[in-house]
Image (cartoon, rainbow, N blue to C red; front, side):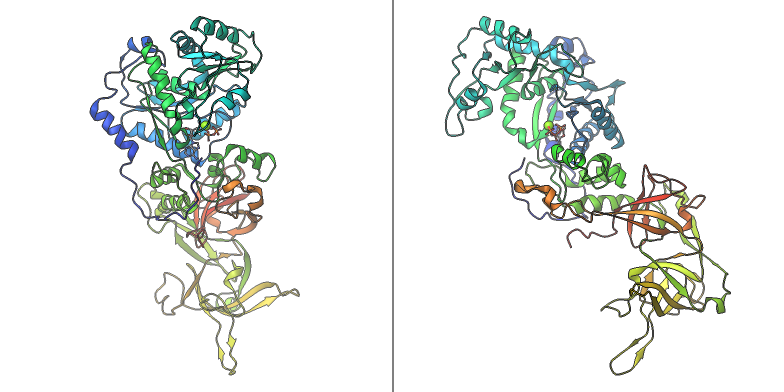
Length: 621
Ligand code: ATP
Ligand code: MG
């Protein structure tokens, strides 16, 4: 992980998508030079001979997304997914969906299923030229074993029986070369015999390891004879008890790439120091004609760091297991299932990935960039609706005189102010009633208006005894009213706001604008409002860098990250309405922001909405 200090990112929301980046330049140059143009593809992953039997590879490039199935994907993985699948799509290639399941522990079908779901949900697939490029690294164990024996026979690997502590001590450090193991001089025949004994279960876990034989004085410590196979008696979910030795990740990963004909193996910066070993290993295997050539190349980019968010799988698991959140799909989590449940869309996440781009320098991305991408993708395509989240009753005191007590007036509003071509149904209108009593936001009334407050307040008497009338406000899509007073309960809590309707001011009627008002407020009529549960989510942590510098991230949990309220929403969102809410539908609640009908809990009988984000960026404030 990055050791750079967090800095305040430039929150440039209007920045155009980056047309190019260093990875695109590398790929374009490889395509121009035909670096991989004559390489063959055997139709499935395999060794050099297998690929030579095939035709010229029909995919111009091959990338891969290689998660370990040991957790749920998060927004950082989404960056990698959009990058790898996006590059393959843009350059006539394919991105392999590969489970890096060479570690027998901590892997689970639940994770495999959720990862596949997440990648598909984001809008990608691994089909190309009629083939599904879905692979499991554990299917390559046989080849990996063969590659290890080849290295031993060629004098490039040896079995080391030093203890783990001795090995660590003899590795040296940046200023000090390592010390060669006393077992380093064994002959290939001796090593082969020992290695076969390891594989046959004749030695205890940890008794010895197979190491590559490179250079104990190499300035890059990763080249000081790194271990490539270890003894580990564990049942693997795919290969069962066939193996009691397992390859190390640094050995397995380059081989997986090579067998799959990957061209550009894109990973995060922490693997930069591993690249010399990646190349060393594949060069040796190519010398032995074991793998197809030219072999894949590794390129590193900066991982995503997002403010207010934790992307460590271990820490996310802790939040879930200790019930700080409701589960992996808690809408406050940056997991893809969580973001999806919150109401984030694949389009928004793809736009976010495009906007943040890729670079070789670690940096922090402000959370508002993700929210901005959501707003910019939803704004043009989601219906508008009115909702009152903290309702207090407004009574029109002259209603009976003007209309008659139980009379209701018909009002309407456009479903979308500028309907999108893909959504002709948004050209219609939503209708609702106006009556003697309507729900308004509690915060839309003040006894004494703070400076600049343009919403409802009653007549004000100043110190010199002059009286200013109560404020006039438009009820959006309805009439103009003048506030006359309010009713409080014994505890001083506001229970009703009173106002008079000013005749001939109904929106859309001639002369409606004759009275100028500074405030416009949203509302729903008591007569036809529909109750809804609204989950008001806020950031999960109060600190922008919750786990930076070894901080205890639990101590920065935001106690107010979820507030559930009973709101009133307009009737068009209810059953049979013009914009009836179905699970997972998204809306813009006017003045409030973007909301999603909860995927699991919202039903026709009980509306449940999640606040995805407000209308404006409020994170920096
Ligand atoms: P672990 O610590 O368990 O290895 P991981 O986050 O590296 O966790 P993987 O399943 O190995 O998880 O990740 C799959 C791919 O996603 C890798 O190629 C990895 O580089 C990439 N990835 C993971 N986190 C991020 C991130 N924050 N930004 C960009 N890419 C990421
Ligand atoms: Mg990893």
